[in-house]
Amino acid sequence: MKYVQRSLVCALSAAIFVAGPASSPAAPAPAVALDAIAAQYWQREQQNDAYLRVELGLPVETIRAITYENAADDAAFGANVLASLKAIDASALDHDRWLTYRTLQFLATNDVAEKTYFWLRQQATPYAGGLQISQLTAFVAATPIASEADAQRYLSLLHQYAAFVASIDTLLHGQHDRGIILPNVETDASLAVFQAYNAPAASSPFVVTDARLAALSAAQRATVQSDAAKVIATEIVPAYDAIVAYLKGPYRVGAPSGVGLAQYPGGREYYQYLIYQSTTLSTTPQALHASGLHEVGRLNAQIDVIRKQLAFKGNLVAFKHFLATDKQFFPATTLAFGDRLELYVHRSAAAAPAFFSQMPKAPYGVEPLPKALAGAQTFGYYDQPTATKRYGHYLYNAWHPERTSMLGAGALICHELLPGHHFQIALQQENSALPGVRHYDFSETGYVEGWGEYASQLCWQMNVYRTPYDKLGRMMQDLMVSTRLVVDTGMNVLGWSRERAMQYMRENLTLNERQIETESLRYSTDIPGQALAYKTGELTMLAIREHAQAELGSAFDIRKFHAWMIGSGSMTLDTLRAHVDYEIARQKASST
Image (cartoon, rainbow, N blue to C red):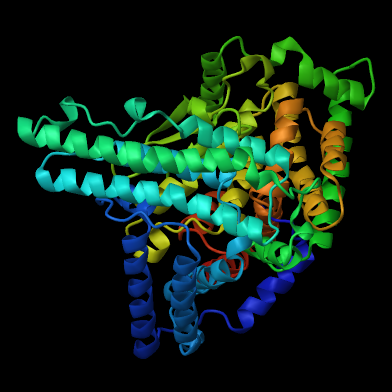
């Protein structure tokens, strides 16, 4: 997820160290003040975040609607946190509390920004909205009902679920009034998501069966079933109907022909904020764009070397066409793709102990993506462990095996599971020494996705990529995340049309046309800026490792280095650089 060149990383690190953590014991007053702020923030998160409560195994009581009032409330809270942090002498904190201080700064800054950019953030699109709807539907529908109190809580959640869906409709109207309208091609994709969940009342996932109510009396069962059916029929179904009807017709009036944030009022400023939010570093679209162009050129040259080694008869364009279309790279079935992924899971697991001193306890695996999300998501996503689901799975999208290439399966597993997201996220969840606010914080996308890409390139050293085509799969994944720097910035603020971006992707990648269509919409209209995090994070982490190797020389230990990188939880990348420098200094001091 990092776009930053090494010189910029070093400059950021130096700036951090001016006011960085002190090595001496923390003064009591700042430590007590910080602990109180962290506890307050964590308490509020547990109260308001339904997804976090599911992760923690706590009963969900509240589903917050997407409203400007809620965003304003969060912003006011965030502003108070920032003011309280400003009153603390950060240099007087011990190192671990300094990390907490930095986390709170980042979280509270984003809280304040949510109000500022409320109307510009999309909430109905496949990635931004589809995942929310999918997760909410799953955990509300699975709410246990073992008592009358449980039944009342379930009915309350049904009312709140309906209000949440209705709030998306209200948001869409408010955005439309402000001239923030999706292009029709993205509206079509959003419509497909809501139509998929717009089930008739009788087949709703929220219908309560007798088996689910076995602990209740017959009279209680009948009442709960009747009350739930009423909420479904009179609130949930109409809420979905309203969104579907709006997206089909009135919403499209005034829709732009182009894509990107720059076309909306305040869009350029919002994109600059998204760069910081996603990469956690301060840079410009122009710098990211240039970094992407450089990496694309470098990787194409490397791919061409392998083309020549394989004695392929044809130029680089023809070679990529071969990689994108030859039948040997495509599975016969959806499950066959999962079997290929498992091959690389086993390779990575066998090699990991030589590179990591600690492995997560949570089991892991791969599963097909829910079919309702298959049409709007290009690849899939990592589904992390929770209190009720103690394993981490990569949910892969191979519902159309004839157009799902296996070429990058190894690189994908190294990013998503081992030693990527599952290692980093599960280890963080299992680290009981972290304060709550850091224990379950994965908001630093530059760190999280940067680690995924760093891990994917680490699999070169771990000997996961053994054949020329394994290696090409990793190179093509690297090329894809590098291309994202070019097209994301291009479409959102640098004047690129979607067609120009798609053509650039066709020229450089082996994605099929459907994948290029969904990815280009993801970058330009769904979650702009998010895709900048992958390559930028990888480049920054590689620069940090080179710095550590230069500082420690023969004393550099890759297992110890990785413990530094993922042993203290998610953090901004400039914080990570300062954290590794702190650990380097400790190692040097202990050896003298």
